[in-house]
Image 1 (cartoon, each protein chain N blue to C red):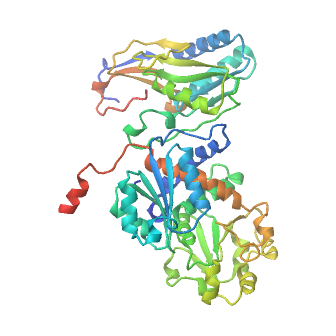
Image 2: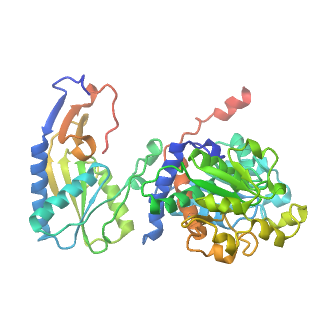
Image 3: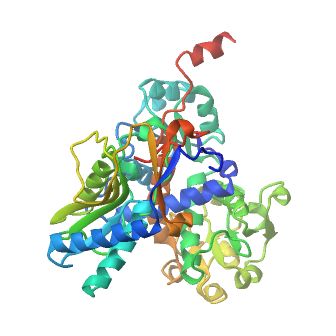
Length: 324
Length: 193
């Protein structure tokens, strides 16, 4: 694996390797010395063109616990605010000799584009409405742990039904999750008001429903997506109250879930809007487990990409391309 | 494996000899420690873990108390990570806290000493043992670091280009230690050192 750009690029055995290694990495959290020397001398740059707390900080912790040097570059306060283009910013950072770039950008496809320009490893930390592969990996990892409490040794998700509820149209988390959960063999059900279902959703490898009450009793896990408040003025739904009535995980809906069904939310949560406080704090809510899993999964990914010999093209490769 | 010449692959220890070597090492470890007090055996994956379990069982038979045995993966502490594609990481399992314990590291073959160096570093991040000892089934020489074993099943003089393979029933279906001339192998398998 050279880059992590899309959940679609990951094969089943690769996902399993990443999750098994994340289990080992999670042990570091409980150790007196939270440090492994595997990435000593490697440099990872978090290049964030969009706000983020948990993704950026968990990539930072993951890199540091593996002994890599981690530098954060955010659009605000960098040359980006002076009008520098994405290409110039990426080439500038890469020219300093970094080994990996973790990129979050508001434009779909920006990390892929960056991977074409530079030799360093590129990790997609969320691009526009496209993908957020590490979120999908940590969701799957959290769910696997949850399922394994009752089914020890469970390998894939065949026979599992998982609902993803909310703003599917604008959600990169939903896209990556549909792709990854499919590879793992789960059946995915997308639940949203018709206005928040993207065009062409029929071609996705997922069932679609507009009725949450009908879906909740049959699923093994439900992932609530954040209602992005900036969408509220877009006419996607009349009022936030109406959204909650139709698609919020309210207390009555909490009771419709099967016993042991998991509740996930990628955060940050709007309590009282898409998820009630009762659901967020329920015994089978995995919201905080997801945050903890984020560090383990990102350690695992960084080790997979950076832990071995450099496989970058030999020096002179770039000239060869230019002259070709 | 079948097409190797008879003189290129030689059995050094058979199943009975491995069993006797383990039993002797179990006695030696207990004797050196004056009993089972504070002992914990940590095997280095993969075959060291199996050997640690065997030693623990042999010691339990002698002493009548159960000795904790676990696994210590050292992959991320190796000094050759950058020399090959990303190595798969093994499982680490500590049956008890290593703080103030007498840790006996267990591995199948002691060669360059680099694995043991990595294990000592890994152990240092997990706690502060009272003492660390090293038990290996085979010491084949050719050390590259100032490291020696406390308990050895068999000292085996080898040439640097020979390959020592330990096969254990739990993993390989057979108990034997063999020595092969590297040149005799069709495809050279990178030796675990």
